[in-house]
Image (tube, rainbow, N blue to C red):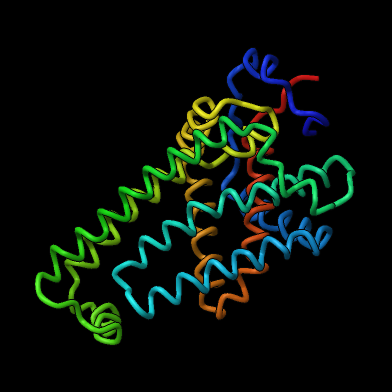
Length: 263
């Protein structure tokens, strides 16, 4: 069970390196089920965050319809902000595990618990995403040396695989950045919130969790991507439910992947 009060900075400095557990391939599906359970138990607070995600999704779609070449930059913002909106969802799951009320108020400022390390982690993600946003524009420039096609023309090329080389390079480069972000963030923020762990140790623990459980965590990544796509395809309304489920499930992923501290 999670600790009632996270360690102080002095206590956190003496914490042992997180012990990573081995999990089965079916674990991600259990996390999703627990995420739904948390959503039902903390519906009002969870849906507050869900509608924040819906608003972000609407912004991505607006940019896509007017300047699709910049969609990666705005999507970058979505992916950068998502883990920090999800901090409130992690805290709701933690409070529920402890038998505490699902109050929205305390979750809004949970980031203060370990502000310095969370800020450092945010800076790392920002650098990665800015590089990806720039790289995506370079890929567009390489394959569309003349005038960019209209949105409908671009979508027809995607559907018909007319510009297959562009699609392979664009999504290949994107997949590399996505894997890097996923690797450093599997359990990072929950660790920083639950134990007051430092950012570097948290990111290394996340990479180790992926290295020791590659297949289950790739299934987890596939579920995250699939549910997010479903949310976007449902006129963003699905994001209001599915993103909180993913956020709550991420807390349960952390609880399964990282051995609790001894009492």
